[in-house]
Image (cartoon, rainbow, N blue to C red; front, side):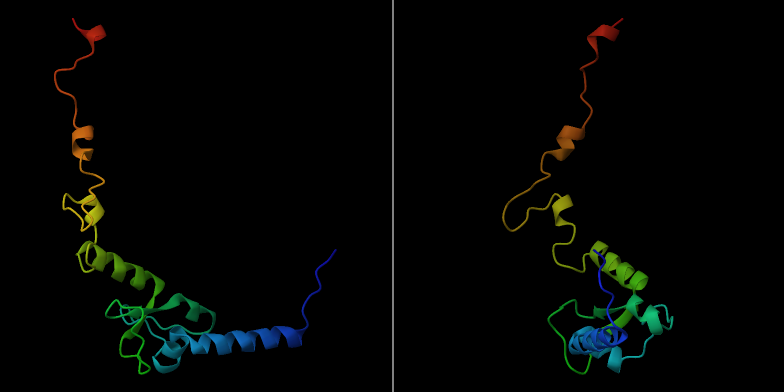
Length: 132
């Protein structure tokens, strides 16, 4: 059985519905009020390439979405990834990298506590077959 192709009117109606839904999100609002330029590298985006722009929350709180957009900046995918990697590695986010450190978490659980001992080479245990 072949799937029935939607009519051009249906396609257009779906596009309009998607645009209306997108306009209700903070991304849609940001695209309306902010210039379509990456706030970090300065590249301009238009048409299909608008999907490469992401909304970055300046304070890191994704629930802080003021209608004036004061907590948002548009960043391209690459700059947005880089921004979060930079912040994560510099300890911007509380507890960033805690799982890989020797610090104890709030729960007291230290999953890698004995890892260093397991990875140390075993001294004085030479292979008896190669003793010579």
